[in-house]
Length: 195
Image (cartoon, rainbow, N blue to C red; front, top):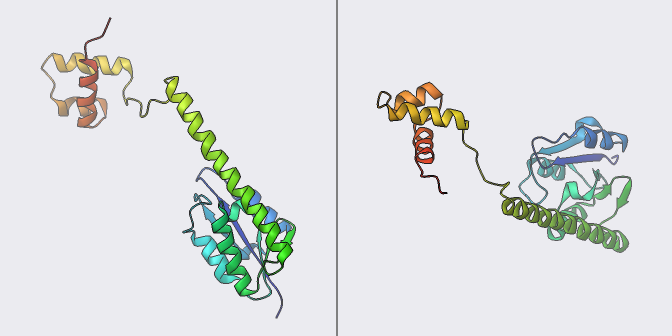
């Protein structure tokens, strides 16, 4: 029985593309039909169908190939759990071109160090995101959902409503918005302007 390379690739958002990761896995000797993927799932999400399929596909003597460790796991406990599963099956793990044997003490140590860095990187990303959002909020740039109608449209809607000739349903149909949007627009435009 020959050893097989099984590939796994993941991207966090639907806007990202797996092409580069797929190509990297093919370049590392993984057959295209043996690449399992997850699209739009973060590494902290353990419920990943593609990863589960890849782990189910590997057999004793096989190698699970991942372009980088952060594609596999974003926390030390998760990485450790996956490594333990691989070790129990007699499967090696290749991170890029480097192969780690989870049963080997040196391989286990390097894997744990890399997992710590992957978790650290994920924590830094979360921290920077929170800081960036706080700064944007403080500058008034993060205001939530923007109105569906322009200022000019809002004023016209309010003017038309004030004539008494148009019902809320009429205005919703004319401006192609929902009735709640008409009510919100009227509330906004009827607020007194502070000096």
